[in-house]
Image (cartoon, rainbow, N blue to C red; front, side, top):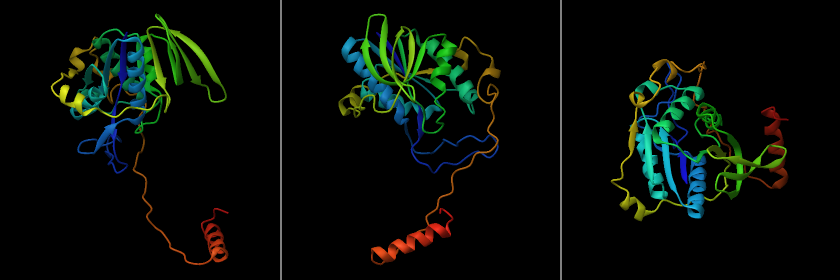
Length: 262
């Protein structure tokens, strides 16, 4: 079975700067980590491999330092990885990002299952996975809560439909976006870190794509533009109150009225 997991490097802190011209996050020099939701997708792939066998590949889109999350995926058990990177991809919205990654997927081969995390912590749109599936022209299911059964040519899953939980069977090839806690992600292995420290990470650029039209990538290929983006204000104001329960209750009530919460 051929499984592909889409992973992303996201800021590891909320203290990030925003480019005032492009309105995108400045990622250079910022502490980063693997998108937490992608850990669940990767663990799902590892569970399926343990049951059915096969090969797990990972793909990420980002600057050169995003290689670190691919190395982390190797430490967890992924077999191969590729980084889609090119300055022409910078500033992409969800549509351009989805198209870019779908082009990278085509360069990596064909897959029975493509797994994505539900969303990313730096964008929170939850759109890239389904949009990729549309570009790849394969069926997809979002918000997968549970893998019920993996068959020879299909997979049965349980999915969250907000008001209901439904069970669906989808034929291979397909794309699934998985919910948090579908499985508990394992920790990276030190032994695998040593064993995979020299493992190749394939680099895919615009020149490797079938579609080399620069107007479909990055800011040029983004139909949505951010009008304004800014980091949230940090409020560190605090007050320490001393008193018995009655006194503190009155103080809290007065403060809530002062702040116009009540």
